View 1 (cartoon, rainbow over the protein chains, first blue to last red):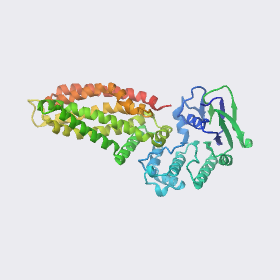
View 2 (cartoon, each protein chain N blue to C red):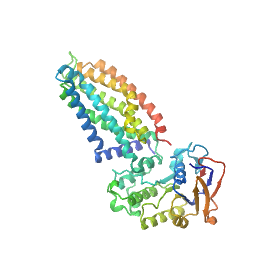
View 3 (spheres, each protein chain N blue to C red):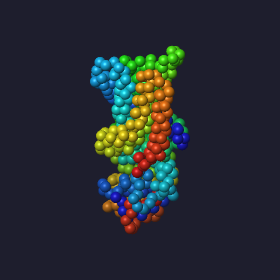
View 4 (tube, each protein chain N blue to C red):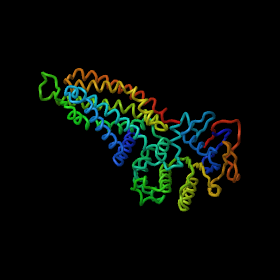
Length: 219
Length: 239
């Protein structure tokens, strides 16, 4: 349950959401990804309302779910091709291979995902994220299940996304990494927000508590 | 994106998964064969009863196999948050439904085509041999078989329309296995009745006129269910 949230994230910013289990980080990301509907209040992504213009929101958002979100009976390459096709991208096997290469999965590209480790599944989800070419990224626990090299890959992808002008929201328990990569770190606790770090780089982010609503934010 | 393109990709995904896991194929073929065998045993040694019950037994087997097929088709989507990821993409919800419907219908129709001669042989019903007296004797059996295959295609389509819809509705529920048949069978009864009547008219007496009448009703139900399911499906998967 989110309440009293009033959040604006400027285009091109990287904002980390930090907080204990059950604080509402995933709820906020799912709401922005149109997978949850606010009971009260509203949320917009690049000006599109998440309820009334859900399809427009989805065209501008790429998500990294906490679980891999891949089909186990398909290979890594087939999963990526499916994702590209359903996002409206054309057939581009080379782009898929480049994405697999980037996340270190090219050798396992034709293996079924059900044989992947949890870290490999997360890497596959990262590859799908980069292929989406969306201006807004919503990352739920991107460092979970990854080894040190994989975590550095996430940092590099976030840095590249910032350079490309993407807006990135990262829900993570890894506070040191959040502090190192994000323009602002916002703590969610009890459904409320509090800016907790790097205010000089967080000028585009404001977080206040107001009259309780179930979710409100612009990304 | 092209919605038809999305439909075909989703159907391809489901069929590709099935071709590797064989979960639906094994379960439905085994279950259908057992159903046909048990019902044949129950009808006993009365040849007339056997012949008249052949198409009913076929549709009972197809109906229960269809429930298994539809429930299983959503199972793979629920693993590892795959459906959640898919629904976060800009894919029209109708395309998700139609893709899954296409795959499910294809599997059920193929099963029906396999079971038809099996039921005919097991129950002593001459498929195509019941052509109306006075037919030309050469083309009438072929026409009967063709219409019979059409009845199976139309019947399984109607069944799959409802089964995929309700399987999606109950996919996230803990009691989905028990809820799915309870919810869908009352709705799908008209489809089954029309399919059984049309099949019986063809196999029993080769009465094409009667079969056409039931087939038209069957197609009518298919159209109504298709429109209703397409309109309502987004409420099934949306938050």
